Length: 305
Image (cartoon, rainbow, N blue to C red; front, side):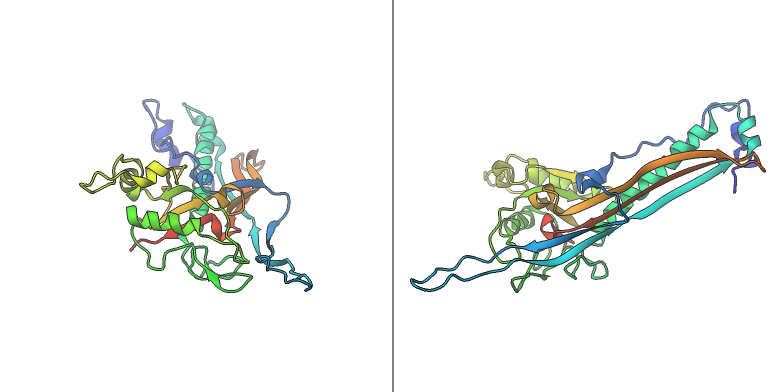
């Protein structure tokens, strides 16, 4: 249905001083702080985890060497969604407008709607990170205490008892991250990178990370997290996270492009065309992309207490 003059009555009045409601500022593209972005030229992308070898055993004198084999484990699939929105203006509404170009103004609003959807879809990966209804290639949720390992057993990227964000819970997370192993149980070098929080935790995070001394104590102890530089990326706020108590720590696995990813299949394009029979002007925006994750070692999380 086209936007008509009746819906834009005030915009057509000669005494109108200003319009408001469509020029609010937006936050920067916050999903870029979380996801590694790659281009795609197919309907979906698929990544396969390849396991290496186990620890090399001691070979006894005169005995044959033991053979090991690498194998493919689970795969992660990214299926692109098409996101699109359109609007139309009647020929008369455009013709009688006395001020700014209606088309230009509403195209800006259209771009804002498209950007909002992209942020929400990106944040949903974290908002659903603890849900058994949203599983990864290994069959469990992104944040889980029982990620199955190809060499047997399980691994966790969460605490056994989740806690609110504080100095102790963050230190525990940083220690757990540093003890990650690969799927064959070999110790790997994984470091924490940055803390991702909802806006409700910004002051807590700032005190924990940026205080000279330990936050909330009368002791003269140094702030070990700040002093050791174990969280070089500091913290970032994502305004689309739905749980005010949840926090996440991205790791170096994510920085290397093996954790959380966004594939851009088609960048956003806008188009405009007239309708011959009605004279209406139609505007459309469209893009294709997908958000997801490959290696769970790219992130550690807590839902809070």
